Length: 79
Image 1: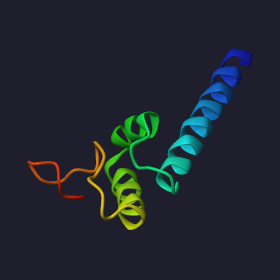
Image 2: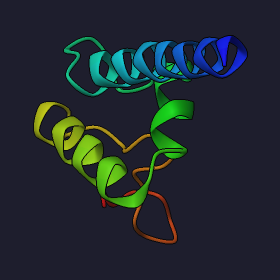
Image 3: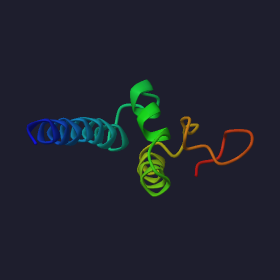
Image 4: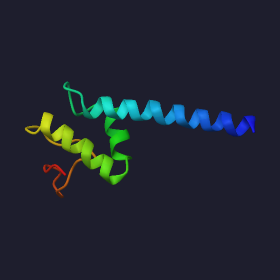
C-alpha cells in the first residue's frame, strides 16, 4: 500500500509541475516561442491546447503562432 501511495504522490507532483510550467507559458508576456512551453502546449489535450493558444493569441496576435497553435497549412494562422 505504501508503494501505491508513493506512486500516486509522485504522479500528482509531476502533474503539478508540468501544469504550472504550461500555465506560466500561456500567460506569459515575454515571448510565445519558449521551447519547453511550446512542447508542453503541443502535447496537451485538445481543449486545453486550444485555450492556451487563445491566451497566446490575445497577447501575441501580431506574431506568427508557435508550433501547436498553427491552423493553416502555411503555419501563419492561429487555431
